[in-house]
Picture 1 (cartoon, rainbow, N blue to C red):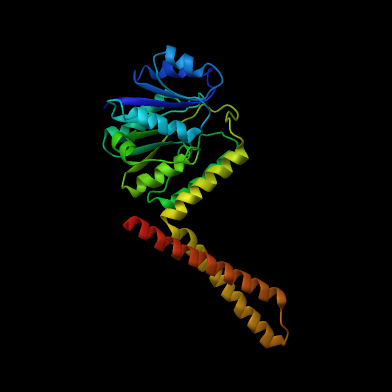
Picture 2 (tube, rainbow, N blue to C red; picture 1 turned 90 degrees about the vertical axis):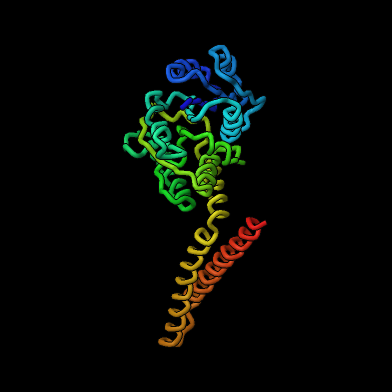
Length: 291
């Protein structure tokens, strides 16, 4: 199978030449999406023989992945491997990531930073990624450990059928949810990362909030009853418990307890709103899909 490497890059002039040199030992088909870099990233990649997609301005990680997908479909490649351009991924792991596809065991393979528990990333990033991954797992069948890994391998069929819309970091979750919906097989393999400090160019708070909101959007629309209905039932049950407690308190002591009553009313209403939202959204999604 022919492997094509895809590198989303933004201001990576310090790393891009070394990475392309390493990747050329594996394949001569390398796509670099220069996402509006202000340095020499694009020119270095072009001089080294990579196929460069140029964004005139910074459009985001998701937009870069979409551009790489589009350019990949114009090649005769069979497998697309997305690979970060910041120097954290090892070229030696490409074989590990592509092997399940070559052996017809998977359609998407994720290089997980957590399967071997060897990552030394900051705790706040690790907790954030795991929280987003847990939310992503609500929307897919086979549970994964690293939904935000940019080191992935895709078959051409996946690229042709999964059409992402996100332009930001939420695209990582969107692809997994849509791939799962289309019945594609998703598998994880352990990888090692060359992690030295926090090299992310994104503000951790805005980045985390953006990915979380995107993940919630896709999970809630794909599984509204699970996302809204189950919490609604829980809040409703707790609210009814407080209703009974309020009534028992009044019956036993002859005194109306306002705090218990407020908690009972608040939780009950909250549960009903969540439950009705889940039911209505589920019905709306069914109607849209039928059309």
